[in-house]
Length: 583
View 1 (tube, rainbow, N blue to C red):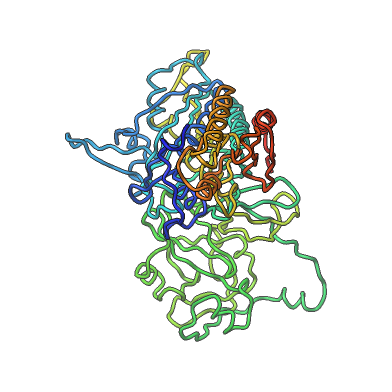
View 2 (cartoon, rainbow, N blue to C red; view 1 turned 60 degrees about the horizontal axis):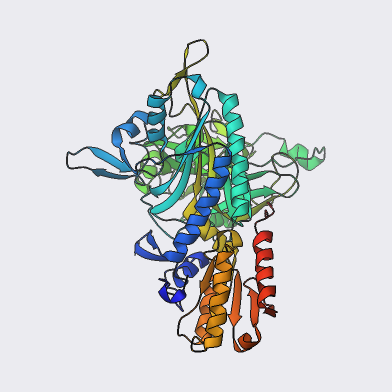
């Protein structure tokens, strides 16, 4: 491609609202342009990269004998009502009506559509297992679109769905897709971790894993063990309770004595954890923090230690609720009789859920459900019920791995893929069944598998850039070689550049030639910004058949003959198609 004809509007500075490095460089390098908040046009270079990611996805999924189809983005509301998701999905679902006032949704995902299709087209076990996928635009009305393509309202996604006869068959398909994902993200040049995860709004049963590209800008926290292979999303992560050493000294016997009855202490305007620890001269782990939540519109109370945070995904699963959120101040006051900051577990008349670590506090301080008062010597089990106890908190960095005594370490990550075992969550309400060998009707068992293709672009740039611009991996670079004649007014340079362009193109190498009438400095700046893996500069030594050869990821520049350059490029293309390590 001749750059003079390419729609490539580069920018020297990024807009002030572009925070993420990937967002800045995609705008500056002319890959995307905003249309509205969270909605983007892909320009020529951005579209080429997206196509390459999609090609890798197709190659790897086709190896699994998955079949590509294409479903409509616009979905009838009746299908979502059948699955039960239409009323509970939330405001992220974009809803609309046609001229006949029929309700539709713009698909954020396609479980309902694909289940109804397979229900109508497959009726025998002989056609199962079945694995289908599509690459399509999805829509989610994000409350806060940000970081460019990392959290957008319109995005490109690969979603695949499997239909199996039983759980054993689903398990084989699930791990087959898991391995395909490892190959896909490795080929895209990503450093990633596959982590245990919560199923979220998709739902399902059994295994679910997220594939996280490690990046400081990532919105998710990845929890890993320093000793074993345990990895989980913070929403799913758990830790091993600390070891408690046995002791028979006087102090431990004193601690074993009965806990005195609760004592009400006047705590004027003292409501935060910091204020309470300072006032009582204690550590946060001696506080019993009570929070009022609304779960599907019904109030519940949650008790955790003062040094912990509620994990709303775990709470939602424990309650088997669709929506969980902190109650507003008015609701909190109506339930506790006190403003926020003075709630406590003693005497509450709403369902009370207690984190397992809070349940083990021997004598704690809690709100008294009265403004400006707290209770001292609160004993779980004696002073409030422990009928509902579970793991309801976020783990903390440095805690013990649940499988060994290794230390838990935190990283930031961008979710680029997710695999689920759905079970019968959709096939049962949508009546997707088949006849088994005995002629008996059985419900299909499902899995689903998503990759955010547009997110992959952001994740790759977050991991592959420097102070001058993007450093694309060969596998998904918009072009592989950037030819730059220093002066298009020099006929020798132009002739040699065009000769190289033709020879490389004939050899199947993707080449961008900068034939613009621009100053050399501008050309070099743009070249660094767009990040093509190899740069060849044709300058004053063109008359001697020599060029300057440089890899984008390197600072080393070499003077080579044309034949040496061609040979080196072929070696690089071949070498850079090998797998990258999975950490």
